[in-house]
Image 1 (tube, rainbow, N blue to C red):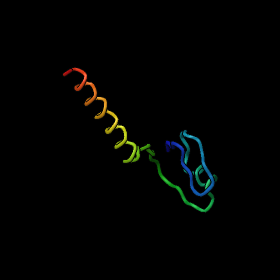
Image 2 (image 1 turned 120 degrees about the horizontal axis):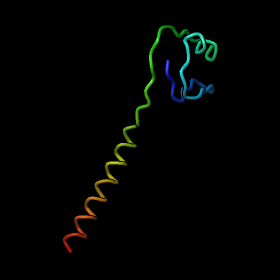
Image 3 (image 1 turned 180 degrees about the vertical axis):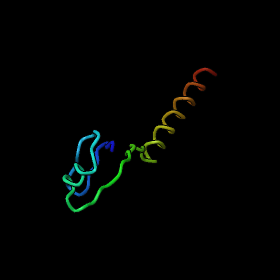
Image 4 (image 1 turned 90 degrees about the vertical axis):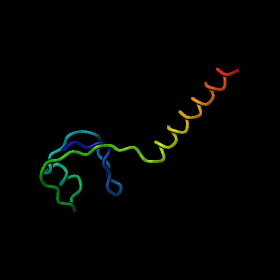
Length: 67
């Protein structure tokens, strides 16, 4: 299983690949089984800020070009 900054409660593990038995030893009260991967997904607010910043840059560039 591929993990990128997984944390439950106050226990965090580094980004890496772990087996289900290793995850069970890290988070004793949980039962992990099978295989899979975890993908980091950006928060919607981050995407909104990036989009707003790009929009501002485009508008400023157009305004300077028209002067």
